[in-house]
Image 1 (cartoon, rainbow, N blue to C red):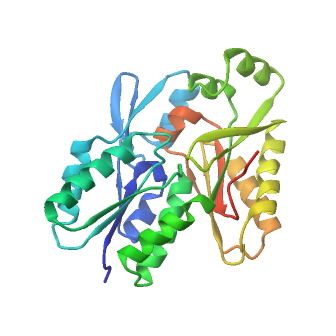
Image 2: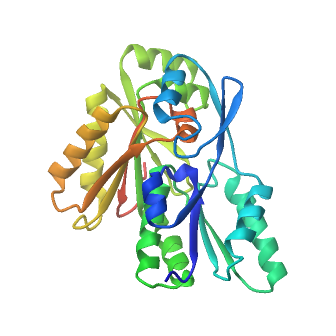
Length: 293
């Protein structure tokens, strides 16, 4: 029997089957498209393919973080049975949700006179957060205490490597990552950025390569340089409705590291996808350290 409850948010981009199998609660962010707000709920309210079809057609999508009231309601119900709670949240550099969760947890723990709710700023995004949660799941299931798991997550979260590329530079322009001129000329020249999440949890462009295939191979090349102990590792991939590219990336990863335990692929959900766009492709694994220019 689990000694504690484990939860995260929908920005972990876990599959519903995984969340159910491992008893993980994924609190939903929300997104607004065509004038209507939807929860990011494993594609039930709007399927992943419908979302990306709308965005490809030019529909803008905006997102909203989880507010303090939603955290308080969930935290109270989660610990009502007497078990403590470990909540691992989306990078604080990309959303205010972590701070909302921490403020609520600090307030409730103060009222209890003891620490029952642990909230961690993952400094991770998308399935990088999901993979960090997977490590916590494995430790929980190995009978580690909540303190041991929280300590391990804090000590190792910056070794969770993220590599991203996108197909359409205009989504980065809208998010302030590129100027209008850079996006225009980059698209004309088929320039693809390769980005990571840095030690402060920010999405940082590092390389500009020509062509989609080269951007994918660049991610694998960096994985070859900085993966740590690949034998038996689980690797996560996510994609913005570009499954063929995700399968190509998976094949290249397994070609380079045949002793990896599993390469699990899933969609980039609509909250992350609202900012990165269709054609986003990302690779996540445990490495030596995050990239430094």
